[in-house]
Length: 376
Image (cartoon, rainbow, N blue to C red; front, side):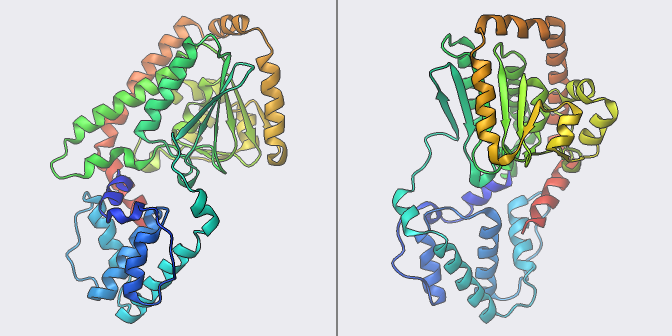
């Protein structure tokens, strides 16, 4: 919720695509140089820029602290307040230095070729009938937005009906598989007068439909876990038919720490996959598993060295794609029986209802606020 609103609270010049002719040497030049940035800075950098600017122009923070439920203003106040008694001169110099670093990180060669992706999920279908969906937000560790949830569901539903698609493979761009939910999903909840219950109910519907699309997908579904996986990227893994992981992958479900409860049918699938005690360690206490621990727990099918992960996983998928699709589909239906699917859908409903309640709870709001302010 925080990140989207923070973006909106800064000038639109963040997103202008213009080249820089010179580096800033004065405070005023640094202010103007912000409009030259081709890429929007991360939110923690935005907060640092904001805090240094306020310290340089107004001195020490003497503003009254906003309430913790006012996520954006509280985070901005915290960033400024944390600068303590830094002098305006030091703040100005630090501001100029930070802007210079941001500008220097954008090379001319990347500026010439920079473009916005057409989708945050890349979709490709090869001539063997394998559809490959790549989560394509590497700068955000492939965190999932509401739009991505909708796109992901749509792609799975279309693949289920497309006779030319034999199986679907899901992976991530960059070093992460997926860092779970993007907190910008809840941006509207921070606006004055927001109906948080209505927003939570809307989010519940999206999440429930998303998980249902995994439960009901009739064809083989393969996960290529190329790096760390967090949250719903982990809890839905037992709904795949095959999960191949790089040895650099980790598996983390920090839901309790964020005031949330299990999702993705994990309260049903995890105890049946790895046993109650291991499931408890992940879902209740947030234990992070290595790739080989996940293999031992039955959460993944195989682990390959990172250096050969792409080659070995591609070879495995080619073998799968060579199998007769109708037989694969019938076999999957026998393994995931109607009673099993009914139990999963019932679990999905219960989990979604509880999540909607948690999203509006003091536990969740307090945990998310604390998490965000620690990042400043």
